[in-house]
Length: 409
Image (tube, rainbow, N blue to C red; front, side, top):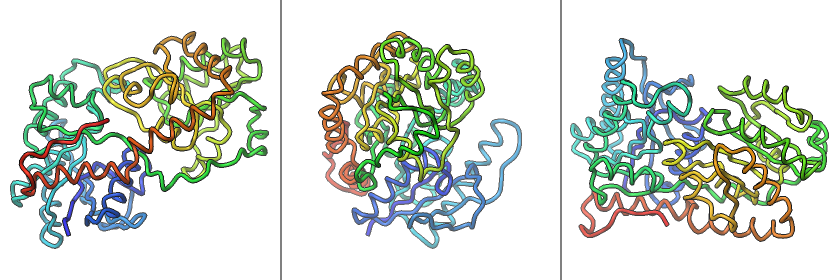
């Protein structure tokens, strides 16, 4: 049985989009007949044993913490993770190391792979220098930005094969001069086995929140600046002019929480906008069930143009209508007018109009939901998409030399 060791920044039991994608990948690979484990670097901060089983998956931890000035600290993290991979391989010999961004994981896996004599796949979920800009913790073109990009290039160059989650990331790497035939695409996906019938509307919860009968626009996720929630809040006064009963439900939290609450307090429709704070992951479906349309008004940036988000796919899998800004990452997921609607980014009026027009198409809602769910099943179901990895693994382990790297539909 082929053994795959996934090299990770962090994992379950920590909750993030990163850990949920990892869980879906490992579960689908195990179901397909592979033997899989994960190993995390020193940025996994959840306390726990050095070997931990979570949701039936085994994760090994790199113990300790690295210190030192910027640059030296990161190289020490790479060394620690590399040594942990090699030590684990003494007892559990993997056939392939499959590292996931950030590039620190990729470089650690590349070093370990050379020492162990086994191939390395490096998978990029986002360019972390662009994510820092989007999170307002970095500046495009700064020294740190350029160094992070350089480290990413080193990982791409050193890996035996590279995977990205979308065309935007792959096309950017090709533009940097990397060969297209080295880079495959594993699109964001969902585990459809975890989505049964959509939850029923909880009228008691709706009354507690004060959202009325709707239409209810929802956002569930992290409150980062690039998500454009300030534009969504600004759009609400215009939406209420066309649909007097409209409410906005914001579920989650993050760096922009305080600023968004201040914006709402000054809004003429403040009574129509509701914050829940963060809710337990097991409770999220109850809040999805309260909404009529999920809105994703991401601002236009390198991050949002190059990276596909997961949330719209999860919403489609739960038979939710989706309205999203017309940025590159959304265009790869949504067929405008068929599986959802797209509107101009950074434009509250365009957002309001798109939402109001979609509310007016109530008689088409079921057809849109069905088309979106079918699109997810055909193109973003982990049960089938995981086979894309098999093509790459077989190629690295001596399979057909003419096998092509997988591309997205």
